[in-house]
Length: 464
Image (cartoon, rainbow, N blue to C red; front, side, top):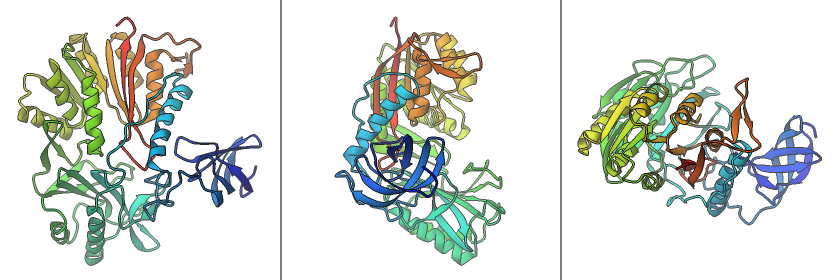
């Protein structure tokens, strides 16, 4: 198999990114948008060893589960990977993805139950984040193509609410009227880099990220936003650095309060521009209620790591004796403190601002019987944190993960299915003998139409 060769093949399964897997003549070929059972003419784009990547030239036998994508940009944009697959099959794919990741990466054998569905297949996201760039002398607003920083221009997005289309149109008008350019990564020219909007129960926080401190005509943009959002705050964020980070350190508020208060799961909470909030409210409620149900009232203390704005910490505090929240982002930790006061949880909830690896050990020493909850970013839990949890012999661990690969690695370490050799590499063991076993595992479809899946896991020490 060589580059640019045309072959005819049939997909046997879906890969971790939702692409079809074709096995032929000793090669494994990954083909985006090809579904299991489908036969197609495929052009080989890249070959490395016995693995290759290809694209569909002609589809001969469409699968019954293939549907027409809702979005016109689907085959070019990197935001969604599964719009061509019927929703019930998306749920099956995500359960299998978690199960296969546990086995192949973590060495953990576990029968994963069906993925909990989202009540909304489209229009579910409460956060919009769009890069603004320049291409062929024109401004472009959209999403990055898969594995690139090439912006695919869009005018609307079906997994976001209807206000998205009006916002993009207003941003384009603002840029054209005021002579503003999108940011060019190659020469670092242009003023505007990103637009980020968070919706909180009908209230909005809009952040315009700029490579310069002052933007001409910003008052005109605010007048356009007045016609879209009834109640909103507006930040100008200054980010001059040649980095992939969306936000710079400097936020300047030009309109509104900066943070909004709302209620979910019976808790009044507050969030700002840089506070982590799950993007799908419906599935977030299901996920958090399940997590809290795994903590009995006899669990006197819960330590909630990577706690964000404190919503889940407060739910733990209401159910048990005391809950600690650890969060590194100062804005989010301040929102958690405001939440504590507004919900009358001063005696049952404590928020600490700092890194989990710096603060968790002291809390576990003070509360040796505490349950530890972990909701880390996609990179997973730091190995040192896992090591300390095991050394402290924590009796119960809850984990929430948005990345099956790093979840599998972390569970492999905790269950003893993975062990560390003298070079610090993780290798599978023939007979897992760790101190922990999985007592509960449930995937949730936080991100319909995409390859991503959220998973809730509970572990207990074996003697427990």
